[in-house]
Image 1: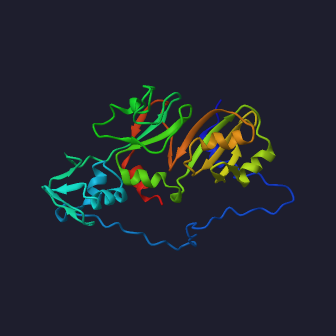
Image 2: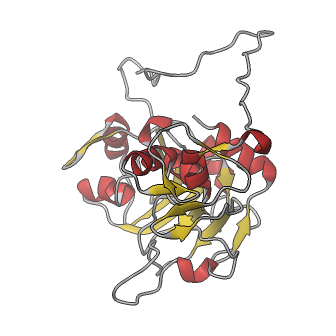
Image 3: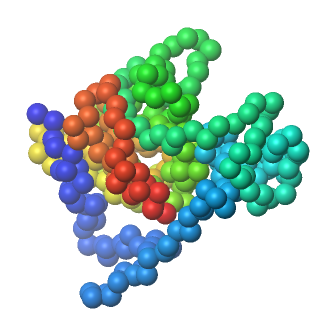
Amino acid sequence: MQPHFKEIMTAQKRPQRPQKEKKSFSKPGKPKQWKKGEKPEKKRMKLEKPSEGIRLNKYLANAGVASRRAADQLIEGGAVTINGEVVTRLGTKVMPGDKVKFGGQTLKQEKPRYLLLNKPKGFLTTSDDPFNRRTVMSLVEKACPERIYPVGRLDRNTIGLLLFTNDGELAKKLMHPKFRIKKIYHVFLDKNLTKNDMLSIADGIDLEDGKIVPDSIAYVAGAEDKKQIGIELHSGKNRIVRRVFEHLGYQVIKLDRVFLAGLTKKDLPRGKWRFLTEKEVNMLQRLG
């Protein structure tokens, strides 16, 4: 029986190296630890009222054109018009009734969509494949009329949680390493992972594109052997989990992303998708 997801999360953070001082996992920029009875001040988001207009970069992001920062570059480059006039000034607002065009097409505000897929094996994470191989878009093509795109990627043979959205701003935040978005993978290896190799991974593995230090790693509780590993990473580098273990001579037989930015696979069968709840969307928007 496959171990329950919570067993991965509650497994010890890292094994202890005998007769050596325990290392601290505190990192620069770690959020402040509040004392008992002390409450942090909540940041209030200033909402733009429709009657006051909406910033042009946000309008472009909501229309699925680009993230706000990329939209600023499009605006400065003269690629956007409002009511037939080229607009290059950042901070310009779109008022109700204004006609915004980009690339010769009139833009419409799309309804923000947030969808979670439990990706099966054998599907590429791309919106289009020149060789006509199966892609994850075929699994969600009838989900909604809006154009949605995968956030990040899972390689063809990796299964598990994959988020889709047309919210470019949120997608960019979830993929940026500085926000340290939590991802947990259930790894199945071809042989038992030795304690020394686990310690090596916990200390960090030097790969060709830089050193990778996991946020935590542990044997899966309840497993019959030490071939099943739970590893938490925030890196979004290509095939990063597989490359970490391959570097030490292990082959990853199966790889399953079981946790993504606070979202889990609960009640979501393989190959199926669901829309996020309002509570889940608010949680994602508060991350970072």
